[in-house]
Amino acid sequence: MNPVLKTIFISSIVGAVAGSGMTFLFQNNQKSTEQELIKEFYEIENAVYVSPHSLRQKMSKGQTDGYVLVDLRSNEEYEKGHIITAVSVPAYKDPNTSAYDERDRIIVQFRELLKNNPNKEIIVYCYSMPCMTGRKIGKMLVENGMYVKHLGIGWNEWRYFWSLWNHDGEAPTKWEDFVISGKDPGVPKAQELPSPCGEGEFGC
Image (cartoon, rainbow, N blue to C red):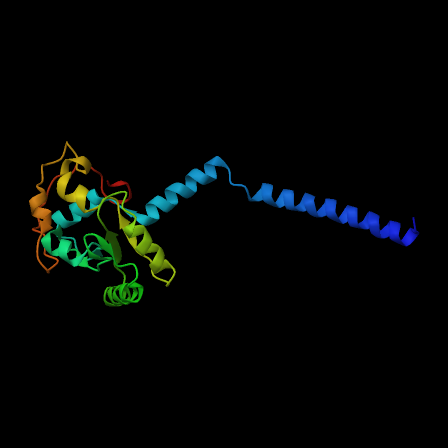
C-alpha cells in the first residue's frame, strides 16, 4: 500500500476509535444516578405542585393574598360551581369541547393575570388529578415565558371527595364552605382551625 494512503488509513481508524471512546465517556458521565433522579423528581414535584390541604388552610385563615387560583374548565362549569377564590380562564368551550385552539386568547389572559398580580403564585386546576388540561396549558405558557403552578387535585376531588385529601385528625370542615357558584371568585369565611400539620416548609 502507498505509504501516504497507509498513513491516512491508519489515522482514520485511530480517529474513529478515539471519537467513539470520547462519545462513550461523555454519555457515561451524563447518565444520572438513581439518587440524582430521585432528587430531581422531588425538586420538580415541589416546584410545580401545590398541596390542596395547604391551600384550604390558607382559605380558612383568610390568607388569600399570596396566590391566584385559576379554573381551566368551561365557563358553563365554572358558573355552576368552582373552588372559592378561583377565577376563570377557560381551556374548554363547553364540557365536551376543548379550547386549545384559542391559544392566543389563553396566553393573553394569563399575561394579564401575571401583570396584575406581581409576586403572587398562579395556581391552575382542571377536572381531576389525572386531567391533562392543566399540564397542557402549563406547557403552552412555559413556551411563552410564563410559569404557573398546579393544584395537586382537580374539581372532582375538591367537590366530591372532600375526605380523600383532608385529614381525619383535624377539626372537620365542610366542602360547602369552600365551593361557590356564579361568575364571581368568592371570598372564603376565615375560620381559625387547629391543624395536625406543622407550619412552614414541612406543613402539609
